[in-house]
Structures are given as C-alpha cells and as structure tokens.
Image (cartoon, rainbow, N blue to C red; front, side, top):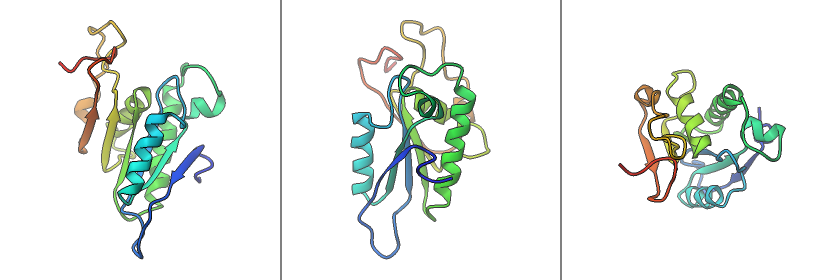
Length: 163
C-alpha cells in the first residue's frame, strides 16, 4: 500500500536529519473529500509543526466522486485501519489519526478496536447524534478508546451541542 492507494495528499514538513516528528492522517466528512478547506488548513499546520500530514479519501469516496456514504461503514473503517498500518511504516514517531464529522466517527470506531490504533485521535465536529435527534447517540464505542483524544467542536453544529 502507498499514498496513491489511499488517494492521499502529503503535506511535507521541513525536517532535519531525523525526519518528521510523526505522521498525521486526516479524512473528510460524509459530503466532502480530501480537498476540504478544513483538512488542507489542518494538514498545513501539522506540517509546519514538523509532522508528515496526509489528507486522504475514504474508500466510498474513492469509488464515487460525489454523494454521501451508503452502506460503506465497514469498508471505510477497513480503509482507515490500512491507512494507520501504512503510516506506521513511514515513521518511528507517533501516528495521529482523525477526521471531520463522518470521517472522525469512522476513525474513532477503528480506534476503539485494538487492531490498528493510532497513538492520538484528533476529531473535528464529531457527529454525536443525527441532526435534531439527540436521543440517537453515536457514542456507544467511545469508552473503548484508550488513546489521548482531542475533540474540536463548534457552537453551531447541528450534530451535537457543547453540552
């Protein structure tokens, strides 16, 4: 597996003789792709901090350029596990994985399973529940996550409130 298999774009850091500090893998939300402005900005910043930052497309997006995921959770999670395994071959440093909304949820589900855990989980706009349906929580797997996790969440997000 390589970067092209992930449909990934690398943000290369300026590094010294020891190489990057680690690898960061970020993926997109349900309606987007690897070129989402948020992912580009986050990967630019990780690279400025000395990390090899990769923004990549989930398997459903590799198969179909438009539209939301449809019955693709298992293959999307398998693709995330493959990306984490690939990242481990690229560095001796930590591997951070995460994503925006749906991509973050899929990455968190992979992280809750001990098969291919990253060293750190970074999530933006995690979809705590479907819009307008707070009774349908999407958090049942979160107790299985044992790595440090950063949630970044806005105040106007319809997928969950700060509370």
